[in-house]
Length: 160
Image (cartoon, rainbow, N blue to C red):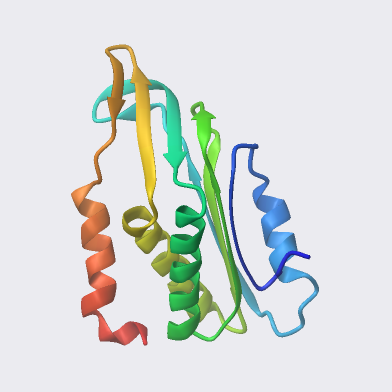
């Protein structure tokens, strides 16, 4: 049985964001707000056209890191639940890569929880990206902006 409250999953199959929202809501009358984030594959990166993206992960370790992020969000805010589903394998432009869904009784907590989860996911979850461009294959390094987004949660005491 899948826990509808806090759930993380890594899969190679295409994502269904609407299904993830419905699974989290599960007719819970305590939920007053649901915030979702859908990360999509872009066709451009660093000025180059990207034809395909390959995402790799370390099974077990990645899920454990994702669950730790979800649990931290639940400690910081009064959440009714959180779901993170991340895709691995080969993707093409417009494919959903990640879905983060956060539910709470009130919108503020849902928005903050969702933003926190995606900011931490970008820096703390062990995924490796390789892009296929017209110039060949290349591994994608972490962005400075992702590190800065994570850092704001460490220094911002208003999120508690």
